[in-house]
Image (cartoon, rainbow, N blue to C red; front, side, top):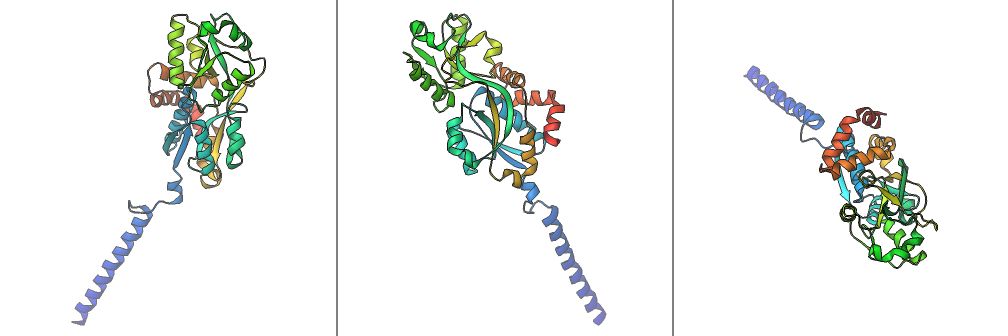
Length: 296
């Protein structure tokens, strides 16, 4: 009897040990295990503004992070709310900051609470843009031909920095024009229609943009310097990202490309590809660059 009882005790102990061992394995590798710090770090959120240029660049960066094994959430907002979201830590990063002039007011308001990571594109510019068949070359000539433009400047989203600059240009040049707020896509559509019929149109424009590849366009000279000079596009991060997620931060820090790269993605989207497909095609064709962004 004692022998059988001993066997029973040993059997019970073995069962208990197996349960503890399996539970231990589940905590380490099973599906019910809580996320470790490394697992949690494989998620990033990217904020951006709905300019064609930023749609292109943000989808490329999203595809890069996905290749590196991250889950990526995109958040499209106007410029002001984007800076506020970064300052409040609601998004991890953005590559949509136009500096030093276009987004200067937002940086003045929120910059102390945002990490300026670096420049991701140089050679950017903003201003008033017309087709080359338009026979004026400067903003200070616009009033003399206001009727040809229907006294209208075709703009984009009302919260954009270029819209604030254009309101200032109307005031400083005493222009007899109304600034029509719309969207980046609507502005491009109106430019396309006007260009096809060689109608006069003036739009808020920026470089890089696919329209400069598709059409013969020019910036109107800006003697008063309202729109500033050459700009760059900056990468921003929320405070603490570098310490909490250094690998993701390092990818953001290395991300940098040329205006021609951005324009090629924009042109593919304008030609009918989805932003995701256009971004994936660029990433597939530029793996050496992408691998450097990911691994250094």
